[in-house]
Amino acid sequence: MAGMLLESGLVLVPLGLAALYMIVTSNKLLTAFILVGLVVGASVMRLRYHYSSGARIDIIVRSSTDSGKSTAGGASRSKKSQPRKSIKDKSASAEDSDTGEFGEIVRDAREHCDADDEVVERSGALLSDVVTPESTRYDAELYGSMFNFDHRCFYVNGRPVWIAAADFDYWRIPVVSSEPASKSGGGKASNNPVRSLWRRMLLQYKAAGFTTVRIRFHWGFHSSAKGKYDFSGSRNVNDLLALCEEVGILVIACIGPYIGNDVQGGGYPFWLVQRDHIRLRHLWSSGLKIWDDRFAAAQGEWYDQIIPMLVGHEVVTKNTRGHGCIALVQLENHLASRTASGLPLALHDETRLLARMARERIIRVPLATNNLCWPTDFTSLASQMWAPVEKKLRGYKLINEPYSADISGFYALDIDSSPADIDAVARVTKGDNTPMAALELSGAASADGGQENAGNQIESALSQGLSVFAVPNFFKLADWGNLASPVQTATASYPAAATAEDGSFSDVSRASRIALHIAR
Image (tube, rainbow, N blue to C red; front, side, top):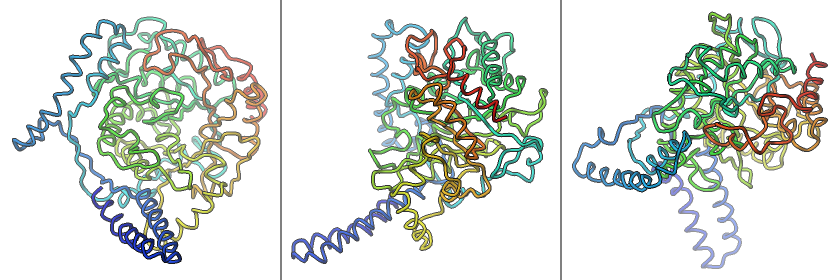
């Protein structure tokens, strides 16, 4: 961070002082020239930080009590820890009113609010220098016989398939009975009260023509407090993935941490959202991100918990049920947004770090992102104007090469009225030999047009050559769907959704079924 500020100062301060001098001396031509230079310099620095945030490859987390080496440091840390005690005391009076499982989540969140209970340090080489697209690339030479892809389609054991998916939000399904107390992710099938409902709904997805489900793993649903995770009962991820293998349906595993704006807090746990000293998604202010090591360390904690549940279920893995079901692992969601001027807001190091974490934890299937928007990030005037500028800056070594995952997906607002251009997609994603992937076919879940619109969107996606698409909001959006603990049936629903809370299908799903079966 200090280096970034120094670099900005070396460029912008002299230009600013020169502009002030010219304004005072009333030299309008030179003043305009200096102001243009000031804007260009600010843009170059903004782009430079976008491609290299100054993050390091090693993130070390220590408890604050272990890291105190001096009396002064220990005194300052003890002062920081006092608010946590006062917050806990304040919440004690309201503890009686917070009942049930959700009440426990709220109390734990209050306890962790503003808690400075660890020290995060970074070291090693720059993340942007070490983590490249090649270093995290899918090993097609080793696993290509079991799972591979090109610009046309995917191949599972040599058999060509297209990945037609719909969202399966397991955390939206109501809990119908008490859950076992076991915290293990590998509980027996008979101990899971929601497993029969999972099976029925997965079979319905398959009968509707979907070959794949996109499962968004909800961090907040599994973690009620820092360091506390529950993978039992309706949270049994291992059981859900094993069921997908039994049914014979593939999975796009969306591990976030951010999973979407239709979930409260984007899927982050309450205890993380309420920690004021952590910048979620590294967002410092509107339109500006500054790397936050604490947030990066928190992401690592989630990956430490969820990825071991997935490793044995990858499609390149053989298990007792044959092959695994996970075909793609999606990192983050809707990340690469831009400012009004077209300058990028997201940091490439965000995706770099998540990709490195996934590969270090032995994820072997292709990594995908869903950060671009069609057509805004591909054909808009701002994106076209900045493309040659970024190319020139890379040529002069002012910015690093952009990071891209194995498959750079996009979310399409209306692919029927705005058809995807395969050349434009390949130019932006640098994926000449990768399939076009719309990991959120938002138009198919739009309330405008209902049943007819859903069928048209899917038909358009297939006719335009998309090898991967996923229909979001396939479940009816419900009151409890925004909470980390679904304990009752909803009272409000999303009218365009295809699946009701009880698992029954609507006319929208029937339209999807007709389109998919005709395509097959």
